[in-house]
Length: 426
Image 1 (cartoon, helix red, strand yellow):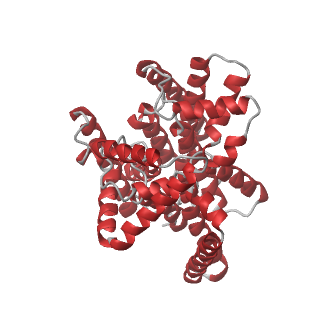
Image 2 (cartoon, rainbow, N blue to C red):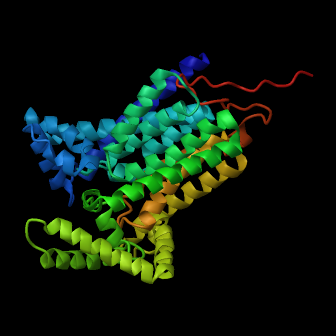
C-alpha cells in the first residue's frame, strides 16, 4: 500500500469513527439537551426564520449559531433530527480539521494522533448534545486556526480570501472569538513585518501598531458617549467586567451568589433605558473597585487563571468521578504540551500564534467569564490539544522510529504534503 493510499484510508477510518462516536454520544447522553441559554438562541433563530434580523444588530457576535438553527424553523424540519445532524457533523468536522492542522504542522503521524485524540476527547463529547454555541464554536475555531496557519506562510489571494471568511465566521460564533482574533493578529502582523525587516524589528512594529490602534480606539470610546454606551452594553464587556470583581474561582457557589446580586441589580433599575443605566452603574462600580484595590483584583485574576484550567481543584460540588476525569484530562494535556514545547522542534511563528490564542482565552477567563462547569475552557483545550498531540507523537517517534528519520514538514501547506529530511550521504 502506497503512502498516499494509507493516508486516505486512515482519514476515512478517522471520519467514520468520529461520526459513529458522536452519534452514539448524542443518543446515550439524550440529545438534544436544553440549557439556560438555549431558549435565547431558539428565539433568535425563530426571528431570523421570520425575516427579522434586528437581534443581529444587538448581539452580532452570537449570530452564527441561531443562523444555523433558522432553517429548522423556516422549513419546519423535525427539531431532534435537525439538531442531531447539525451538532454531529460540526463536531466530526472539527476532528477532521484538527487532523489537517496536525498533519500540516507536525507531520502525518501527529495529525492522525491529534484527530484520534479529538475524536474521543470526553469534554467535546459531553457538550455535543447541548443546544448551545459550544460545538459550532469549536468547529469555527478549528477552521480559523487552519486558515490562519496557512495564511501565515502564504501571500496567495485564494488563501487570504479563505482566511478572512474563516475569521468572519469565527468572529460571529461567540464574543470571546474577538479577543482571540486580536491576539492572533498581533502574531500575524509581527510575522509579516519580520519577513521584511527582520524578527526584532517586526515584533517592535507589531507591538507599536497594536499600541496605536488601542490608543485610538480608547480615545474614540472616551470621546463618544454613544460609542461608550454601546460598547459597555455588550454583556461580554460591561457585565463581564462587573462580574470579574465579584468572584475569585468561578465555583457554582460563587455563581449563585453572583446571580442573586444580578437579580438585585435588575430590580433596582427600571424604565425604557434600564439596561443602559444598569450596565453604566456596573461598570462604574467595577472601575471603582479595581482602582481602589488593584492588588486584590490581580490576586483574584490569578486565582481565576488557575481555576480556569484546573477547576477540579476548586469545584467541590462536582462528583469524585467528574473531578478525577477532569484532572486526568487537564494534567495529560499540560504534560503533552510541555513535552511538545521542550522536545519537539516547531516553526516559531505558528507556535507563537497557538500560544497567543491560548493566552487570549486564559486572560479573558481570568478577568471576566465565570465558568463553574468548565464550558468556556473548551477552546483553550482544543488549542492545547494540538500541542499535546505533538508531544505524544514525539514520544512515539523516539520509541518506535529510527532516530535519524523524522516526518516533520518544513512549512504549513494547504496541500499538506509533508517533506522528510534526507539522511546525510556517507
